[in-house]
Image (cartoon, rainbow over all chains, first blue to last red):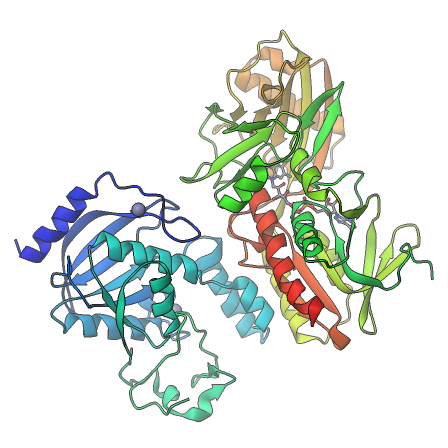
Amino acid sequence: MSEALAHLEEIVDHEREHECEGIGAKRLCVRPVSVAVLPTRFGDFHIVAFWNNRDGKEHVAILRGDVVGREDVPIRMHSECLTGDALGSLRCDCRDQLEAALRKVGSLEFGAVLYLRQEGRGIGLINKVRAYALQDRGLDTVEANRALGFRDDERDYAIAAHMIFSMGMKSVQVMTNNPDKMKQLQDLGVRVTGRIPHVMPPNAYNRFYLETKAARSGHFIDFSGRAHLPEQAEPVVVEGMPEP
Amino acid sequence: MNTVFPLDPHPGVLVVGAGVAGLACARDLAHKGIPVTLLDRGRGVGGRCATRRIEGQPVDHGVAFLHGSDPAFLDAVRSVPGATILDGWPSRIEGTGTPCQPDAFAPGERRAAYAEGVTAFPKMMAAGLDVRLVTTVLAMHPDGALWRLDLAGGGTARARFVVLALATEETLALVDGLPPGDLELEGARHLLRMVASSVPCLTVIAGYPADAPAPAWDVAFPETSMILKDVVHDSAKRPDPKWTVLVIQAAARWSRQHAGEPVDAWTQGLLAETARLFGEWAAHPTWTQVRHWQFGRTESGNELAGPLVVEGAGGRTLGITGEVFAEGGGVEAAWTSGRLLAVRLAERTKG
Ligand SMILES: Cc1cc2nc3c(=O)[nH]c(=O)nc-3n(C[C@H](O)[C@H](O)[C@H](O)COP(=O)(O)OP(=O)(O)OC[C@H]3O[C@@H](n4cnc5c(N)ncnc54)[C@H](O)[C@@H]3O)c2cc1C
Ligand SMILES: [Zn+2]
Ligand SMILES: [Zn+2]
């Protein structure tokens, strides 16, 4: 067994009874429950599955190398997107973003992708499909999308922060194009020592980002004429993209 | 035209619906110094948080208990002056059927009721607010930079800011008549149609002599019944009850199928099923009352993340809120959705 895996197993063992007051306004607590090796097409990782005190969503950390007790761990927060991540939907960029994150972390000595399970409740997959349906009818208005607001960033940050503490990471570098993400984590007590821009390689599906003309009031219209909803709560950056 | 208010137009916000959502919104606006008036067709506040006094004994015939996990909501629930809180009620659960609110027993969720009846909560929220009861809004119209509400009995009321804090279907009844053309309003209307999913609930309140064999549970969720959603042992909430009282709530499908029948028919149907499950004594109450909730609970999966604010010509603004406009459903969601709307409206009334 690798040293990294041994460290993670120690943590799972040590946290067996963990249930704290919770983090953030929503008082979220997570507990690492099981760990295993996870070889992927993007590199070799460990996967840690978490319990939480709110719902049946099993959040996971995909870890590269030994992060326990480490400083400056590169991390990427990714919010689950069934349609994009698993089904390869072209209505959003989630899959490209996830792949870019796994490739990047997989190429490093150590790092983590925190995969946050958001979808599945009222606010989640059902409302995302509703948002798509409104879009199909040309009724994807600002207010309707806001009410459908299928993202709960606050919850994401609290869970991510707790995962970082649970895994014993001493400080992190956040892979993001949204500096606000760093601040949100800092406010929850995470030591953030830097930001790593999250840049996706260009491919057949995200080429339109490279044409400034494609942007309509901050929304990018893809080749099929649809706006890409900002499902990962940060601006997309494709390699070679002109500055906004 | 005959306006019912001394000030026309109303200088602040008119809130239609004094259920928990409308009250929460109005209260926060009033705290910020914004003039608010609530209009409700009912004889009391609270909407589906409803308590009747029967022979001197309070009976909750809508919401059976409050539940939530938001610390601010739980604080509000615990700080109702003069009310005896029953922290943790219901604690004795019978059956494994789905609770009325599927989340009510999720980890982190707290439950409570009041010995005085569940309306203690909305009554506390209404204290000090300008509430016009027995005032039904029949229709609304754009009127220049204002909204005009037509009231039953012939009156009208006008304001730049109107809030609808109703069941989704009741909101749709008012906004469906508005002229088309405004894209934001169309988006909102379409969204409301997508989430309109209130299910009906036929309810029988049954009173038995206090020496009847009172059940050993607070709430039953029978898993094997196609007829009953739940049975609430209401008198278990009352100190020294004169009557043993069951509140028998029918399943949505059964309610839909039987709503058109004479009241006696469905009352007997619900009593017979209760007796089948819990004992013959339950078939013969000393007295009964009924309530037909046309828009009862919202089907889960239809919750939105926050309220809608639609701005029209001249700053005329319509806010739409209610239990579906926050996560989780139920009273906590109604409360949260009303407060979220107050935050957004307060920004605008100042500007
Ligand atoms: C049988 C039943 C059991 C339930 N049990 C629970 C439970 O145990 N726990 C829980 O948390 N939730 C429960 N719920 C759900 C809960 O009642 C609702 O989520 C919550 O009360 C909704 O609050 P609201 O303010 O959004 O709407 P409402 O309470 O419906 O308020 C709307 C108000 O608007 C008024 N109104 C409507 N139309 C007009 C008009 N045209 N003009 C003027 N006024 C109008 C109505 O009179 C009402 O007062 C239950 C619901 C039912 C029906
Ligand atoms: Zn914890
Ligand atoms: Zn996506």
